[in-house]
Length: 179
Image (tube, rainbow, N blue to C red; front, side, top):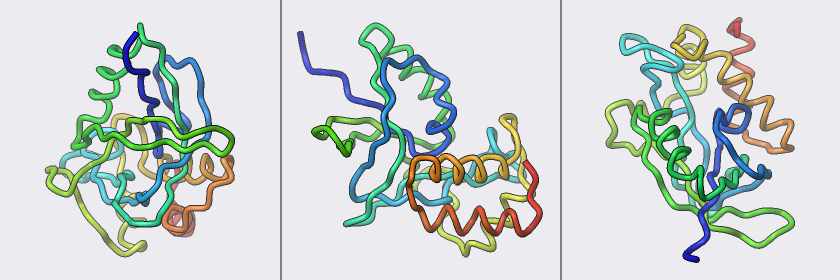
């Protein structure tokens, strides 16, 4: 019957808006990655002239990144990957990762990471700089503020603590960012 299909791991907007067909959805974590607002969004949460900032994963030994894992049926797998490849086309690449559940063995997973070499990578910045950029950015999927605040809320709902996201979200709220 072949290898089982990997799970899709979401750590950004896929947590609250997967927008694809799945059979099962479970909170999960992946090891050795940290979520960071280092990727530019020239379309969904910003424009080419004024890109927003969305999260990507940065390799970090010993770190754990929490999010949501999705099991997709075999018949839907290729269509879901095509849809996600389009959604994540702004510099993200598929990467295999182990997906760890609290109450079950780890499984093979697939996630999207924006490597430093992609043309939309913005890299590290001070949280204040990130929040300022977020507050002034809007794209075809809405404001960058909405993205940051919904991510922070989704992580709280999962019981996940992410200091980077929490810091940026608090600054966005302080600076008066509106969703």
